Image 1 (cartoon, rainbow, N blue to C red):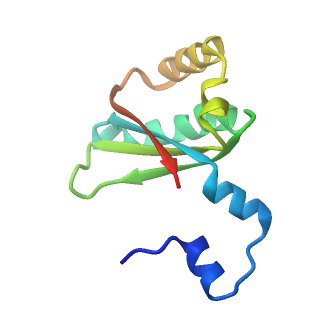
Image 2 (image 1 turned 180 degrees about the vertical axis):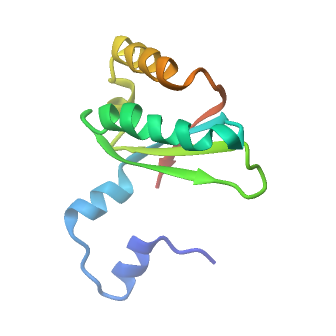
Length: 122
């Protein structure tokens, strides 16, 4: 049986900081999966960190961004981007997103976006 950490902490009497409790209960996950040949992975990830992550991290409601690689699908890169809420995520200007994308494509070329998913952390 899986028990979320905050429920476990409460059950055993551990006090979590309020900021952590809010982040655990009010979070939207943006999940992106890209098709990136292994030979291009390093340049893709470097450009992503310098361009996308740098600008996204300055946006209201941005919490964090992780990169997940699968040993079963070596040509796929997953980004797990945590936002305080769906409203924060969707409030990022379309114009800004287009500008970032243009800069990224100029740096490394265009790669296929295979999947965009949204999750809510309960």
